[in-house]
Every structure is written in C-alpha cells, then in structure tokens.
Image (cartoon, rainbow, N blue to C red; front, top):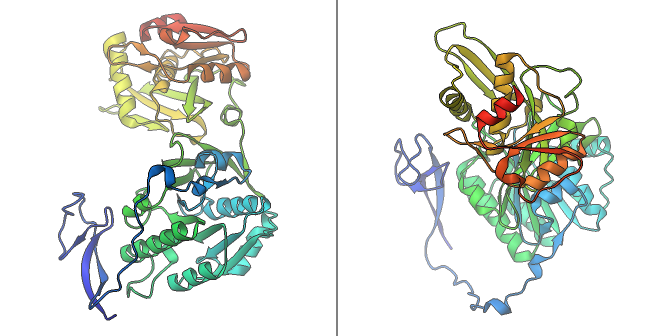
Amino acid sequence: MEKKFKTAFVCTQCGAMHPKWQGQCRDCSEWNTLVEERIIQASGRTKRREIENPQKLADISDHFLIGHKSGLGEFDRVLGGGLLTGSTVLLAGEPGIGKSTLILQAADAYSKMGVNILYVTGEESLGQLKKRAQRLSIAGTNISFINLTNLEQILSVIKDNHNHIVIVDSIQTVSSDAFASPPGTVGQIRESAGRLIEQAKKNDFSLFLVGHVTKEGLVAGPKVLEHMVDAVLYFEGDSQHLYRLLRPTKNRYGSTFELGVFEMSPGGLKEIDNPSSLFLSDFGKIRRSGAVVAASCEGNRSILVEVQALVSSASYGTPQRVAGGIDNKRLALLLAILEKRIGIPMGSNDVFVSVAGGLRLDEPAIDLPILLSIVSSLKDIPLDSKIVAAGEVGLSGEVRPVGMAEQRVSEAAKLGFKKIIFPEQNLKGITSKKIELIGVSTLENALNLLF
C-alpha cells in the first residue's frame, strides 16, 4: 500500500484538522491553538477489516470487569476500587511533582499481588530507574523495565510479552515512524496514545500513560487525549508542602469526587489515612482571630481543614481581595452578602483568605466557615478552637443544607471537637452524644451566636 503525505493544521485543544492556518479554531472557538502537522494519507486499495457481529447485551462477556487491586488504599479509591482489564488511565501532573515515584510505587504494589507489569520509560535510563527503585526500597519482582521511545518497537515488545499492566512514562516522549514531526507534537501524541489504547483493549491489559501538564494546568498535547482514555488522574500539590493529592477529573468506572492524599518523604510517597489530622496538626495550640475549622467533603470522605482570614485597612483606593485555596470570585460574592445582608462595610478593608496547608476546596459548604473567619479577623475576636462549621450561604443570607452531614459530624467528633455549627435543616435525623449540634438558619443567626 502506497502512502502519501500532506500537511494540515491541528487544534491542540480539540484535535480538529483545518486545511490552512487561522487564528481561531472553528470547532472549539479557541484562539492560537493550531499547529502544523504532517498527515499520512493511504492511497490505492486498502485491506478490508473484519467486522464483528453485533451482540445482545446478555451475550456480551464481562471478563473485563475483573480488576487488579494494588493494596494502596488511596490509589485504589481514586481508581474506583481497582484497575479494570483493558482500561487506560492517564496520570498527569507538573514536572517534579512525583508522578514517576507514584507510578513506580503503584507498580511495585501490583507486582506484590502477582501481577506482571511492563514499565516503558522514555525519560530515564534503566540505571536511573534502578537507582530510584533502590531509594524507594522497591524489589520489582514481577516488573520488566525497558527504555524505548519508538512506538512501533514498544508495540512489538508488548505483543511478544504477555503483561497484565503496561506503563508508559511518558506519552510525550513516544513517537511513530509514520510521522516526521518530533515527539510531543499533536500528531505524535494522538497517534501513539490511540494505537496503545487499541492494543490494550484488544489484548486485555491495563494501560497507564504518564503525561505532563502545561503552565496553564492542562495535559500537554491535544485535549482529545483526555477523551480517548478511560480515566484521568491529576497528581497535584505544592512544592512548599509535603502532601500530594491524587484527584480524578474523569473516570468511566468510578466516581470523580474521590481524593487520594499522600505525603512525600525521603523514602517515597506515604498514604495518609486520616487527612484531617495532617491539615489540623497545628490548630488550637495558639488562639488567634480569623481561624475557623471547616468540615469539608472530598468524594466519600470528610476532611476537616483550617480556614484563615486576615482583614486589614486598605492602604490604597481599591481594596484587595486575595484568595488561596478557594475561588476568588466566590470570595467577592461572600463579601457582598456580608455587606448587604449583615450591614458590615467591607469597602475600606483588604481581605485575604487562605485554606491552611495549601489544599484547594471548591464545595459550597465552606461558605459559612469563610464568613465566620472574616468576621473573627475584622472584630479581632478568636473563636473557640473546639468549634467546627459547615454550611452554604445563599444570596439572601440564608444558610442552606449540605450533603454528607453525618460524615462531617462523625469526623469532627472523632477528632475531639465539642460543637459543630450546621444548617438547621441538616439536624433532622442526626444524633450524636460526642459533639453538640448547633443549627442556624441564617448567617445573622450564626454571627449573633458566636460574636
């Protein structure tokens, strides 16, 4: 079969092809995302592919539902309980965050369960990998390592060796002979990932693809890469803190609301079974204004975190609104509610809000703790260190109910807190002898109660 080449302009966000360059992609409306790629076009007669016959739902085999458990509780939780046969998982994160360390430790955990693993590395030599494994105390009995970046060679090795799991670290280093462009370009990433995923489903092995993240926080390469895989896991954290978070943004076989918490140590990543104790390690030792404990939820687990606020007189004409760990627009909205519904003027004050430990929270249940911490700092009145709060605050100042109320109460009681400020509607059906439940219906009720 003769092959012809032509060039096209491919969008790095949606993968759409355009015959000529233009400033905006017609498919996804993004600007300056088109890059030129060399495209292969087959000419002449092509071999007809065999087509499988349609099957009834009852006749479809469910052998792929058999998954592998690593034994790492935090890792398995994020994957939805286990790694299913034929599935593809994209592990993404910033350079140096610990992606290779995590995937190597996960591979070792799978190998201890009797799972055969092929680890394809394109960024490190085998000597460097062995040195890393020795530092992490990894024996790797059932793990085979190979240093390859050519797609056709990788597919040949996969075909000749039967493995339950294949790891490619990283997909940006893999290139195909069919493209003249260098590794990491749109066409190379799409082609390499597509053919690896096709082999995984055809030969019933699980596939891990390690990917880099751009400065915008997105997976490097075309956005279509995230649509091709079954699960996308982001490994994130702050280099100034020891903890790392494994957060799914897509999972066809499990929930996307789970969260895995790890701590980086000289010997590798360690699981954190009780994240609340990590984020509250210094809370309560010194009473200070502007600090409130929030009962937050990530997935099916409750995490207690400290919300801190600092309110000071504005030095310039326009007051500053700085948020760390929460959405900046959400902070502006809560300050507007505080000024309009409670009558506390905030136009002459700078407001700084941060979630201690660098954790990022997006759920609405932290509205009430944020407002309580702001008022505490404004009035310079410290709150009781044994109080926890949770509740969504509406535009009219009402405190709305939150989900997973029992889990929040249970976590607060387990860590020794004495009172929890909760939406009044959440108190129905909840009883606890270890912690006092205080219901509030409006923001004004909560402020009058505490201040």
